[in-house]
Length: 216
Image (tube, rainbow, N blue to C red; front, side, top):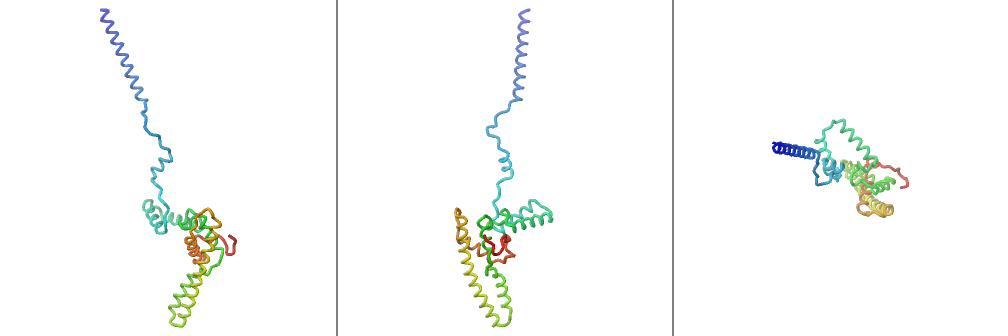
């Protein structure tokens, strides 16, 4: 009888031990976290991944208008908000803030070219009034008036071309002296100065920030 009791006691003890082992295994299994196999991404990387790649800035006005239309369709806003945002962009563009300028107008080099051009008066600025004069002269029924107007316009155009060429060379030379560490393309800078000088002072964008005769 004792033998049977001892066996029963031992079996019960083994059962208790196995139960304890299973319970401890379950507890360990609940608190155990398996390895991920890779590093946890940073917050900045996770936000950039959710937002996606950043689109490059528009290369011209047409591309900017197209992108604005797509943004309006994706994020519809009221007309008042759009007008206020457009007014703010226009004001900051006129003020010459790089963030709101077209790519062709950005950078300290282009700002310096604009200051050089705006600090002087140019006959090139009469290009638009001259074109209007030619149009009016063609409407006049007198042939002699048309001939004189054509001759005057031709002489003015020749003078403008010469002045534009000399202005481009002068501005390019000044830019290279001011920014010796940058690669300055003479044709690009000269053409930019020519276009700037051919516009009426009140219609230039960005607006002139120096007065005529000011030292730059």
